[in-house]
Length: 138
Image (cartoon, rainbow, N blue to C red):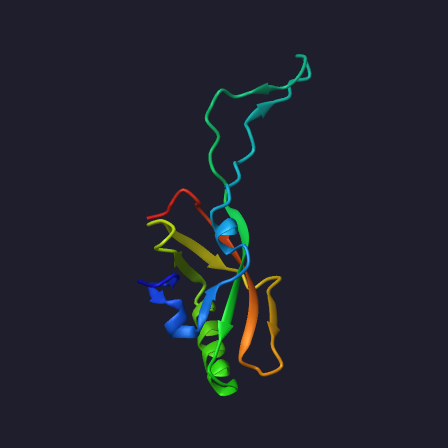
């Protein structure tokens, strides 16, 4: 079984990609709530809060990956293929050993990091995503 599935593909065999530092901590982190519904009436003391269960808001997350190639040319080919997969925008991520959850993300391409070794065969990559609805994990 694959450690990491991206868009239903085994990330390691397809692109040489594995989970990086704090990957599981980040993807399993709590999600934010939307703002509470309030009424700040000037004729009453304090602020009134609506008695409703707050809804979940989208969340922004940066996931760290590592990528490895057998040679510089293999690494370059895998990197190009991985970039093309991310540029599709819709990215589903699953970590089967962690849970059956599927994380439905949007790749933003903003504030991404890329650090490659001098042999040009390994890199640490940080990619930014938005999870529009953190309660949808099927």
